[in-house]
Image 1 (cartoon, rainbow, N blue to C red):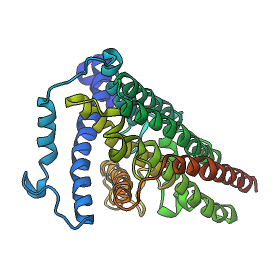
Image 2 (tube, rainbow, N blue to C red):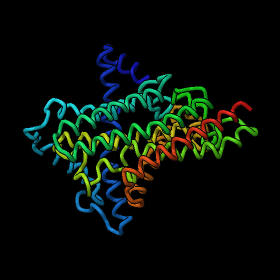
Image 3 (cartoon, rainbow, N blue to C red):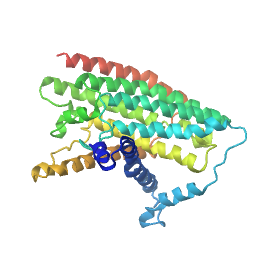
Image 4 (cartoon, one colour):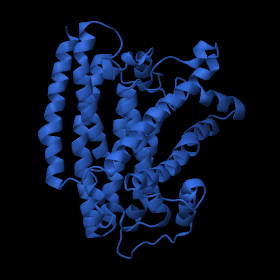
Length: 357
């Protein structure tokens, strides 16, 4: 729909596709990242009985913009012994992997980059760019701390993708679709039609699914925390051990690209969880647009609800950062391979048996 509008406006496929691809970056991702940086600093401050940024703008609201201007002006330092080609490509690759995931995320029934039938599979697939970029950054930096952080990160992300994919398969098995837009439409109505409450419909099967859907949500949320390197799974960037991990040698805008990719990933995985388990862009209790006969207002309401759900799970990620201690490497791997993966498999089998009833 958005593509058709720009095609009619400019009469060019290339220009319409380019504008459509850049819209999420300038309209949502960049403003969200600036807000999330400020928000995390304020959340952490208030959890520690501090005030956080207060001087630049109202309650320090303009501090992230000042930080961006500072990063723009910083010198792009490249050490003499780095592999310059891979060193320069790595931050771009990590950002592209994060940015591409937004193409399949439905913000509403209208605001969606590409209504892909394999939307969930696409998001899982493009996350591989980030893995390659992180490993490339650590190896090309010629720094032992960077390499160790990159190896940790790759091992962690690849491991925790397994329970994530198993839970996604569970949802697909129940709903029969990989399209996130279709999945959101299936959860329309009221909040009791959300997958976390057994999905649409009624009867014994729906109520039998509820506890296992809650378990599935817990597994995938923990797994996505590990995939975006958030506490307690932040060992790839452990400041007390690795200085800054895989991006230790980066400065200026290359560092900013890693930073932006991290916050974009935080919302992407939160949006995925919201779409799979919490109705996607659906309202929990109906739309004001239907109540007042304003059909054009419904997509705006859907955008609000989807963004609110995503930001809530981002807030929980921030909350956990200042609540839980960092896991050791062995504890992190044990959590995945000894607990989450077997539990996800058992959950998959049980839900499969329930759906056959």
